[in-house]
Image (tube, rainbow, N blue to C red; front, top):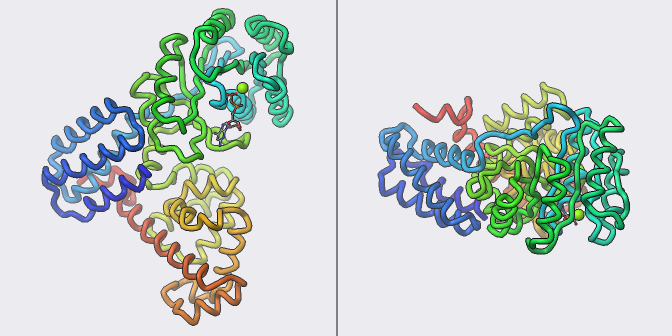
Length: 440
Ligand code: GDP
Ligand code: MG
């Protein structure tokens, strides 16, 4: 994957006391290939590499104390810039309701995302109205109604015999009459961009004058997603993009190219089929995720919302200092369980992703976590603090005690070691004060 490839490039650089211009060039050649393979737009890659090189040479990294780190820092910052730099919030109308129009190809995730967005707005104490403007796709209205019911948000529909433009007009009026401060229009999509679709969307646009036109694109489609964004933007003047299916096996190309090619900010990212899997898009977090540092910030934010502040702070400190034992591991598993769907959380932890990969055959689910916990609980106090004590006979005892096998025990210990190593790398990379501590 892109993450793995970039990590390889950087692990070569990290140890170096001196970095020559040739080293930088080598590294950049590999970064370039990794980005192209991840389906990032060719021109975007070219500009990106040029910028990184320019900064690296400008800083004269060869004179720096930790030249490898400086380069990683530059790449991290440029990746962040590429995706827009900072989080871009939804526009809010001066006079409510704020009108949001969702557009995109069929299957991109418009209807699902409309529901998720309504849920996010509700969490911010807003009263969104969903409007069903897709009269073509069988059961599209029903799909929106089910989502609305699930989250307790009203859904406005006039069935499938009224034109989408008339539905949109009536929906907007309904919102005004009922004190809804946000209106979300779920529109129809096609398999490909065609004139008829664009005409209909333009007509809706004219009548409801949206504050936001959000294009929903499937991140799995890579550069196609970027081409789609380009065409929609030319015709409808998008205000933002929502990337969906980032939970899938995406290569990163869409996330990295959309902003650079279209100029439209990515405002949200959807990472699952569940209703609460939509998040504001944070370029800096995505960059560190791509660089394989795990999404520490998201996790810590979630942790702070879900568990008490002391524990969160302690967890963060331990991760940074890599003073991490099996006791902490268990503790963390318990905390993590409270935070939400395990798959999502696991993706955010440095090293966990790898761990998940190593257990493909076992699949990360609650049952699997139960087995991991059983293994850890079968260790003695000393073993949990000092995993290096776990020789073969102790491992056998742990396997028997936990009702698992020696293979599973070995694997867990190996993965735990890898994770500790990654945390160490991560903390040395970030330093106690974050990436800025690198310069010096
Ligand atoms: P629309 O045609 O654009 O309205 O797309 P839908 O909202 O009907 O979504 C199409 C399919 O994609 C549905 O099966 C959704 O459950 C799925 N989907 C939407 N967003 C995501 C996501 O972020 N992750 C995953 N895994 N599936 C998603
Ligand atoms: Mg739909």
